[in-house]
Length: 323
Length: 277
Image 1 (cartoon, chains in turn purple, red):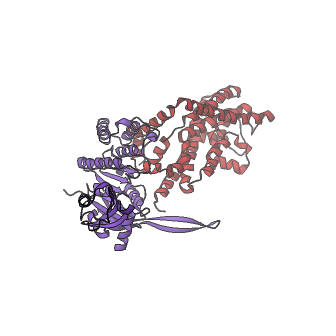
Image 2: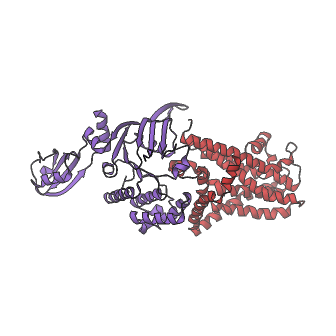
Image 3: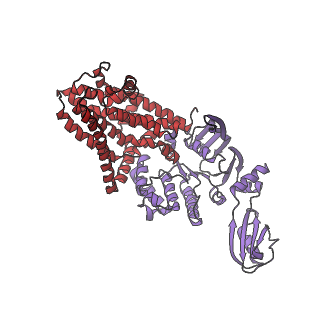
């Protein structure tokens, strides 16, 4: 049986009217096309990264997919439903987390928030308890389940938010910048959880992020939106091929050494501190960080290393130039 | 259509989520008992201060708008019970711009419940009961002090008026909140109608000039919440151009106010999500 797509957008547009004051009483009206003519579809069970610079139209798209905003033109169907007309029905089938806006009750402990949400979604008590147990266990919430939300750290709160969005076992999980502001360890734990959750329940995922690692680890397809228009639709490798997005390995050496040029698959982009710190750019897909490190280690003793990710804004800019 | 709606509302399962939301609010408010007690104390103080204003007026005159001191106290009590009950249950609706700014309204839109229902149950300001208590005490003193011909209708009016009056004020709060969708930061302006309506309701409507009287009777139905029923309870004729039987129509005024308020709310929410704008 072929299932219908979880998201289907066709010719999706959203305009906003912006009024700017012109002197004391007059105001200029200007129409901004936040989203212009987006057409895409996401298969049931797929994981898609939705990326773009700030103000590119990501949040507006998500709001239209989830029924918060009505499209100015075009059609959208999420879980087969027209979002704004069947908002309540759709709400039972999707879970949404806005990383910078809380959906929890700030003065209540998580436990009470979940109790309220179970009532909101009219969940069967036994199933809700089992599902909550599973989420508490896998997101490691037990130690702060009784702490009011306002006292939680950002990482704890985001885990709490994700559990809240998944409590009713939605078919589609929409995450808007879930890892923003998290430390490396928290990001990693969240990614591991999301991969497991999808494997266990087949939940579809739509993710907006500024973090290329999120895209790489969590999604199999990337949509890039630029100024409200679709700029790229394909795999991450395909995107990297188009724009040549490079990662940079920064190595700190024990002893100063002349520039490490001609390391296979890399380009030397900087030598600092008289050769103690060197920067090597490489393209994921052509080589791996491990191969680069091995090649460097043959020529010098590495004390420390860091990897700089390509900036999403940079990728989008290059994409724009490449077209 | 109408029957279906009624079955939906009558089904206790439909209300269960809202009850759970409300219960979580009550729990968080009662968690800090001392601060809650202080809040109630403050509300009592505000109620007393407002009544002191009436008292001061009667230090200089003996009749205001056809009512003696006991009559005005009765009027004040009925208006304040109605307003404080409405303020307790839906007074927080004037914070709608904050709900919009913080994204809470979007969170409401992502839950399978009515947005207005969630907004109403997102807070309940129990401390306003302090003001209700003051009004009830004043009512208990004013009733025996007034010259009332006790009949079944009198009891009926005394029970129904605060309930229907609260419904009218609540509708005004919903209407004011709906206006916020367009005004964004117009809480001050809309408060003039909700709190202003409450102030106007605490005085005999007959003291106002004709245009203001019409405004507070038919545009903002404040006169229905207490003044008109008070005339009936006391059995006095009222001003020549105001038919006393209007006092029976408080529930009708409440129903009309709610129809207008719900229509406005629907339009406002549509404006927010951007249908047809």
